[in-house]
Image (tube, rainbow, N blue to C red):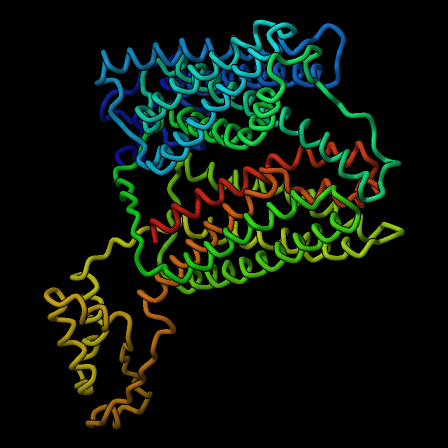
Length: 602
């Protein structure tokens, strides 16, 4: 009994109270039920779990304190100035800079400490995107320095120090992520957890600061536009934080002020991307990676002409629509209504095509035999969670618009175009999330031509009875497939002949008879499926970039139609939009990044 059911450790040896039994000693198999049921983890897991919990609570407290400072400044709280908020952000950036300097210097002096890499994290296209957004963020910092110089008489010194510190922080952070985004930290894990979680929430606070500044600017423009639609009774005074003194060069300061708000969308995307990359690093601390490596993603522009042409058409049309919308909205009531109708009709048509493309893509994936990759991976799980989490922002706004249309007593004509648009926004994100998640969880094809050849030969030679000439010909092609991949592709993608023996009695089975052959062609060849999926991914990629442009650059009908403000009230609806819109904007950029990965993997 003991030779078959002995265990190397008892409950006492796990907790360190009694030594482990000697080799060959009899041990009761039920001596440690808690250990083997998973209810009592080993002591080695306690420090790691404790550090994870402590670091996450530290980060949340840093984030909440920063949010309260932002809220206090936004509502003009007594004793809280813009300088206090910027001082807090500068302090957080300096702490992160010190930690990154320590980590980089240690990684160069002790390179052996970091041996494992997460091949899923820190893709080159992701690093390229964050580098582009970082470059524009540095340009934004230069504009802020110019704004400080123009209003130096009445601005605090922190207004000038912040853009300089932010630019240094941006350069250092991009350098850090390029070199260490794939690291799996196995030493100094507690310090690593606190440093990484500090970096995550520092970037989230900088993101929230950019969202707050842009939202206040958009809100002031929104209040002015409502006057042209006849909603002057619901407007309130402008919430302005402009400096109290005059600029030394009025024209220059006006240009800089306008340019700053056009650059904020890129700054916002930069910080949210950086925070996600640091979060993956934080989740990877102490992780044991699987032995298999993720295949390198290669970008190939081949066979996607249809999807690219249609997507570029949507992108060019979107830019035109946004320009016309921004010109017409707020000029007069007639022009504002025509601009809203134009936007709703165009956006509804684009979303309808995207829904159809997503349904086709999901259907193709469901008809494939490729198994799902169920291995644990923080980067892939974060992608899926962000897709669903950030989509809730658009769903909240869309359901609010649908409810407002149903409950409103009066309905201007342009509001009825908002109903199909809101429904399609909900449906399109639902279908697109299914398509992306279905794709990123697919295992890459690992079967080579020889293995496929054996599978086809096994089908043809399953029975020893003579086969038809067509199957014999196909099996001969399969045998030579190692030297002729084109013929093998034809075999795999074409018809496969299967023999069906009808049941007869024992006397008939002993006699010779001609087998009945049933050829069942596959619905679509594998190459055709791959082409369709690549075209769908390219099309949806360009469409998501197109739909990112309107809200990022001021084309927001949720602000401008005025119907929701009447039903819900001005301030409640503005709070909903200001909270949900940043997530909606980020969803489009994150979806575009995920679809680019889908395109490269397909």
